[in-house]
Image (cartoon, rainbow, N blue to C red; front, side, top):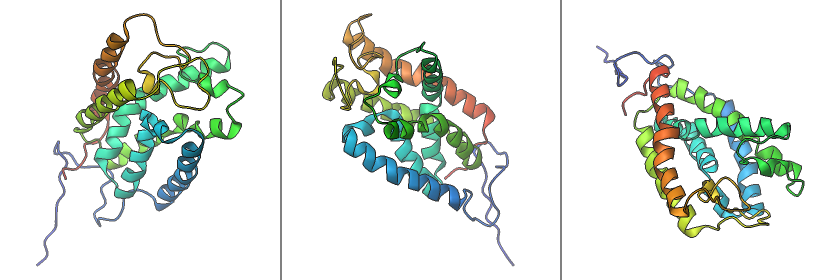
Length: 230
């Protein structure tokens, strides 16, 4: 007599990519390729920008995605997806507009500064492909509905560190990370003047979880398979 362990998704529907054998669901080649990229990016960013660069949400997502790939954690990849899909779409739109000399937000201005090496700017192109990778990972591992709350809590803590402890914008920041996660406005050279600085910070604390990540959470819940209950 044999017993079969049945893994049931949270919503009761079969997961499209769950293997019956329990083997890894993600290709080893993908894990190795991503790890190789990170083995180049992390020390390079650390050398040129310093450790505070890894407070940017996109860089946090890079690291969590690396762990999520190897552990095949639906929660980690779901957190990254709900946290950065919308901002990365904005990044790509601003970058494309910047190619035509009409940036939308200024968040990709650094990609057009000659003092930043072509190698560094090339590494930063991960903003363009990481969203697609996360969609692929969430499709294969399922969307963990705890991701929105987990990312929102992490985001608020990181925003507080960036606002209260990290450098504000300055006219010539160079490669030193300033205004991390735009806690002082959309420019690295000057703080926004539309409203008092605490009001802008409060807007981010509320707006990022609700207005930026909230719709992404609802979309992922609607179109992605549900993650298997741990």
